[in-house]
Length: 277
Image (cartoon, rainbow, N blue to C red; front, side, top):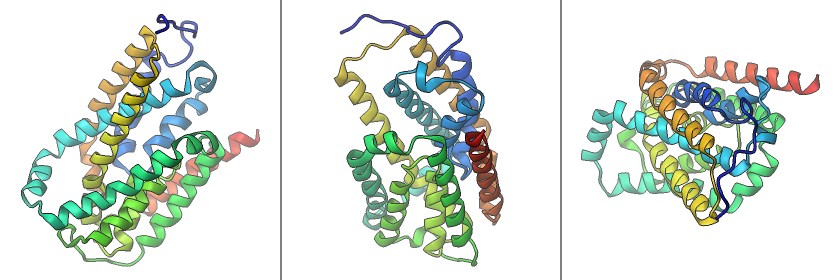
């Protein structure tokens, strides 16, 4: 194994302070359908942090997965009563729904992860994902729907799973795509949000395990500052997600998705404008 090294000069790269900023961004963007992954990529770019040059791509991906895990842990704690209630109702049908919502994303990630990172990780591709996800959300949310989460069938799980797979493209948003898929399948807004959160944890956990295994298997050294940055980012993401739990009610209280779609289109517009300068 190579000795630890920190190739970036002080104040450059993924510093603990920058990690804290990204962790603070992760919380609210994880709970709203605005694409937390897009914000983790675009915020540094808008602020002029040259992370693409100063941070190893695998280290940056590991950091992004880690802060998602911090947010997922906070979500698990913040929604523990609701999750416990869902677990008590678990039966073969519900297990099938969760499994079918999980498998498409895992299969797509295993097959296309490198291609997605290489071809779809840039600002313009992220802007396209933000716009495409916005259109899907608005279209799916137009008509009133009355199905409840307990009515979900395996076909619903498969449709939501395909939406999670599509969200591997930066900007599409896992939360936004699964909300749109659930709404398109006839679920009311609150129950679509419940399904979206229910299917999120297995996928986030699988991504964390896979990335951790790849890093250990590669025998790569991680600098001390990188470790500190990850620890800070995870801690702040956990705290910001826990503090932002009230945002979930913005969607559950029969609120339309178009304001979030409008924000996403506005962000995409800023990205496209900046790329033309």
